[in-house]
Length: 348
Image (cartoon, rainbow, N blue to C red):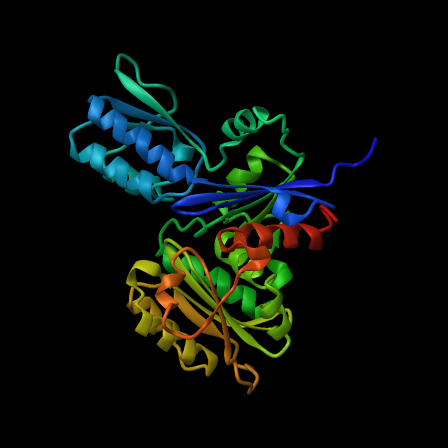
């Protein structure tokens, strides 16, 4: 039997989940592509419906990404309704369950009795819904998966911003090889990635920022400049990540919240990142995650700046190059996932 060489790449962001059904030998423009609401947005709608209906909610399932769903839970509590949650999905809100309890959420090990509640099943993957939809077009899901999620890591007592940035710092200190940004064996502190791999045990996992950066490098113009040294910036719905890369090595990076960025700040950060003048404390104090630059940063000009991400409009007037890998910016993360899967030998 011929080995299947198809891969489902799912890039799960704060606003959308971007999906590519990659098939080796198929013209990329003819591969199936979808941009759908993110699971956290879908779960927020379910919670809001329960709030309008005056029902308590019972959260089951898996740890998943927060954001819209967490805001909906806070609103539900503020309206005077109860929230019950199993321990694992409750960590979506905070890694430390004591903080979750302090918010007014009741952690339970079984469904609450004699309560009129709506069950909300948490999880980053919506494979059943996707499978059912594609079946209408006589298309089956493949056996191989590559998934990107944004994982702060399990921070029980410290700032999750600091905890996440320690992960980035260690990556650069350990050589900064771009190939090391994808995982088949996931570090135990990256619990959101582990939750996804619990559902699909052999899936490759990446961080959404790393997947988008890797995807931007698939743009031919960006790839042509990569050996010279470039800046690549992903301006996502929640996070903005900028990196210095030369060849296959990342020399430095910063990460901030997109809502706190302006065109002027973005340009300033990029310019000072390239000359090793952007400090971790400065970015953190501005409510970002941080900045880290290798002390051996080569004395070269990082003049070429490539931008991707759904909020790239922040760079509209800055004169940077807008990366369009395979002619489709919204699937930058998926193209990064496909590239990583090829590097890991999952597909051709």
